[in-house]
Image (tube, rainbow, N blue to C red):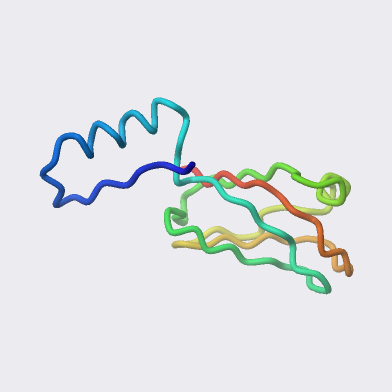
Amino acid sequence: MSGYSVSTQEKDPSKFALAIQSLYNGRSNATGTVTLTAAATTTTVNPPNCAAQSAVFLFPRTANAAAALASTFIGAVGKQSFTITHANNSQTDRTFFYVCLG
C-alpha cells in the first residue's frame, strides 16, 4: 500500500487524518520498482514526486540486480524523472526497489 494523497482543496479532516496515519505507518508515495532496460545503458523512471534536488536510492530486488550494483548509478535527476546509468546487457530481470526523497 502506498501513501494517501490529499488535495490542497480538501475540506474533510478525516482524509487528512488518513494521510497522517499512512505516513506514521511508513507508507509513502516516494517508492517504487524499476527493471533496468535490456540492451541499453540507461533506464528512465518517471515518479510524479521526483524533483531535481531529490535523492534517489536503489535497492536490489533480484539476484541479477544485486550483481549489477557495482556498475549501476543514478546518472541524472530532474522534475518527475531520474535516469539510471548501467551496463548494457540482455538480462531482463535486473529489478530494483527505489526511494526518491526530497
